[in-house]
Length: 129
Image (cartoon, helix red, strand yellow):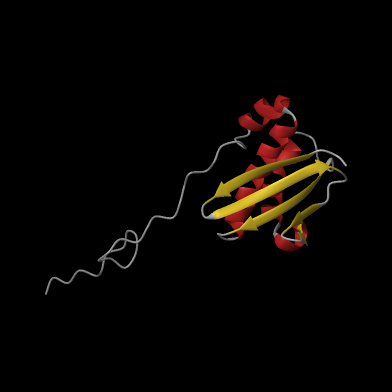
């Protein structure tokens, strides 16, 4: 059995737990193939970017457990987790991944709704009379 490298990635409210091992490039997200879980090309590109940057496409099999958030947030979380797992596999990839900004956790979160307002920033309509 080949070595398995695990990592966690987060973005917005999404969390992705990734396990990579040497293989043929099969990617499974929540028990479904990548193309089925992330249907658009943009989301697939987001997820596969760490492999393209490090020139390790089709070198690893990936199993992902993604929870919370939406599809876009989950794609970002998977991307960060894959980058971290690759780093665990080979620390020499660090400069390459870092230059592409793939090791940076995106801190942007949804702003909370404030009391006495309909949303985070929106105010109720002002009436002069």
